[in-house]
Length: 407
Ligand code: GLY
Ligand code: MN
Ligand code: MN
Image (cartoon, rainbow, N blue to C red; front, top):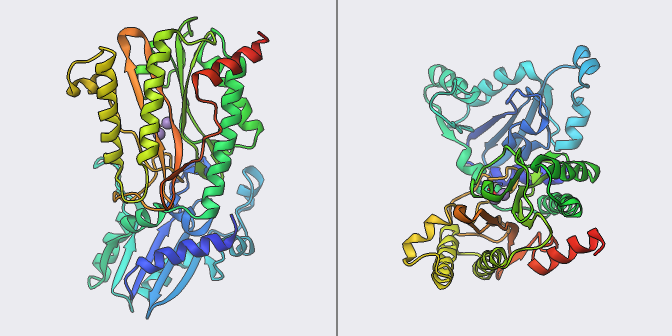
């Protein structure tokens, strides 16, 4: 994505900030993995480097922005590669005021002397964690400048990240396209083998097609394993006659795909597997029909549950609507973007949101675990299935496998 995109992201945040306020975001998350850079820092700057600090400052409705970066480190350059130069940071982010990292504190305190509020991105995952960099700094500011109100920037980030731009959608379409190649590689090689062996065809294919990583650890769950929602061992032998559930996604330029498909290990669904598979597939259709601006993901889930209740009663698996939860025990939808479970505003869906549509039925007593998951863009009047080209119907799956096996 080019610098114009990140300029727009900063404008989006700027519109939500109160006047006479500063927003400070650390790239922190000291990790060897580039995609572990703070997503909100990346969202604002397009930069994936440790130790940087970005500062937005709204004064009399005018946006000022600056970024602070570590000095050139010869040792780092020799071992893991040089950090971006000031010139490269300017080009990538569109921020022209690039300063040495050691100036960030004196600069923010100078700005705070004329400010009412300081926004920091507080996102505590658990009460046991050490204080975050933001919490440490907030404490310091409150002691030194008690007149400053410390505000949480996280809900503002949630609001802006809920709506995807054209360029963000392009990254997601590419992540999905690469994931499709990986799924086709799986289907081209499917037969009884270890779950991790079949998974490895996905790994090879997405790497070959330019994935920058995984959106999340791949789930390759055959037979009963498919009933465990976050099964990640992938160490069982897949049996002839079983289904195998894959939940996987490529990562591309920081954006995620999140797709699930369920296949017959021997290439052919049994009549019972087909019956359950088609209930899941039609359940997904019901959700597609309902997904549009104004509806909530909770309402989409209720539509699915109602459909499953009708169908599971029809085939005699349950007697009461309330028993659906025995066979379907997660939500049908979450937002997708920079994170697989993306930061979002929990409001009715809006034009430009991307969500998953992932119904599943898990019948452990029959060794059947089925999930079908596509990624969906909310449009003006409904939705667009971004992953519609990924093989899905019983007929398509069986024909694809038969053709690859040459029969
Ligand atoms: N892959 C995680 C999920 O579908 O939510
Ligand atoms: Mn998934
Ligand atoms: Mn999902």
